[in-house]
Image (tube, rainbow, N blue to C red; front, side, top):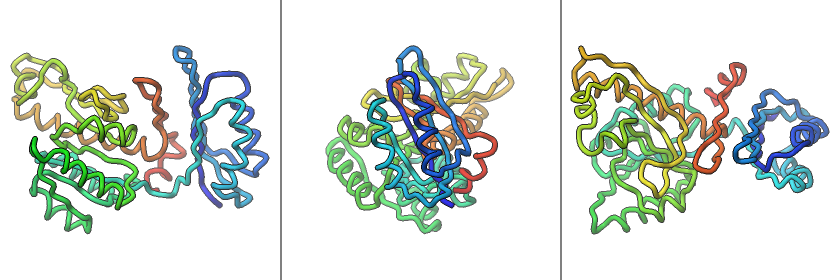
Length: 294
């Protein structure tokens, strides 16, 4: 029995849910999980449905059959197989906490992805990555070689069939061109002190200002640096008794966790772009285990 999902976004109007559920019922599909959101501010409707095809319908058959249903509502749709793991490239520089966390979650099956390559501008994690039987590409980046470096990166994307790039603390600014080519398919992580504490040693700056919360933000990458649509955020409390080193340690933990949750939501089709924002449907208790193990 096939396990599929359908993503829908369209202008909000009456009859959308009935049309979708009616079609799936007619096709012999049993809905196992459903989430929807009607944004009254943008006038957009979003829906994600997990279902089982009990009559052996293929994805192509469902796509073709659903087209006449979607057209009157101007639906943007995507049918996909929930058991298929998305092909992902990780990019990293010299901070390895997010890379290590993603590799661990991938190895134990907690993150349903296929890591097809790791790209870095340094050699620091070459041995770690190769020991996981993952190709490692060191592509140096300088102002003079930036265009060629990005061309090499995009060739790797094309050759591996990667569907998502995850910037696991990759400390190079991507060009507008690359951001546009991979729009909605690059996820980044950074501390949430921006824009207050920019530049070097943000945690030291935060310590000196006596902040009480440390956080992290994961978002889609756009041409506007660190201002893309936010997918996931979290915080941890700190006190006057902790040191700048404690801030850094806690910050690494929250960055790794936030990035992993953002990647998990994306690869399971639970994130919808909604202008400069996102709609993120959480995994229901009944569906999380199957999504987690892929």
